Image (cartoon, rainbow, N blue to C red; front, side, top):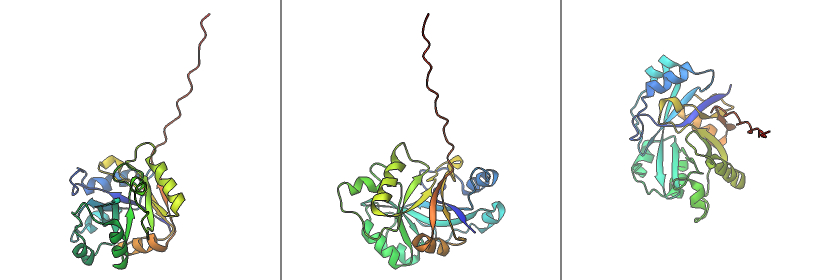
Length: 227
């Protein structure tokens, strides 16, 4: 049984989002046919709400909710899955100058996984940093499909994956209700917990999936000759 998860989303807990979690889940419930997403991961900016409990909302809407974090490093933004108390003691998630290599290695040692997101994005993406710095070691995967990407950014991310052999995930990076689930990741396995998710990201089979509507090609203009 496969599982489709939006691995990158921001609720109103992030300072640049005004999207209530309940509105996200309701949107997905109503649009399951066009965005068949089984769950979302809240990756709030520079924080982790260890005590938040979303079970009542999960039961109400039939959509799983997991918690992770998006942090900022000297190689751009990174999603941290499987956050533990040991990690939040070791790293100040509010620090916008975390060392990426140290974060990746230590998170892995503590049982989690750290994945660079929107690597093709200027300034906060991995591609730009690789142009001037050595590549990071022990990268499990990067986000190659991001619902907020501008033209050319996902393509740069795909080139990065092809060059370095990274795994590839997808996430909406939603800050607005209507954008939730636009991009996601399909896992071959049945993922029902953060422990399952971390295990599958490290050793499982998965692929990014794109539910963004396709634009119809603009027909070529037909030249009309004057008589």
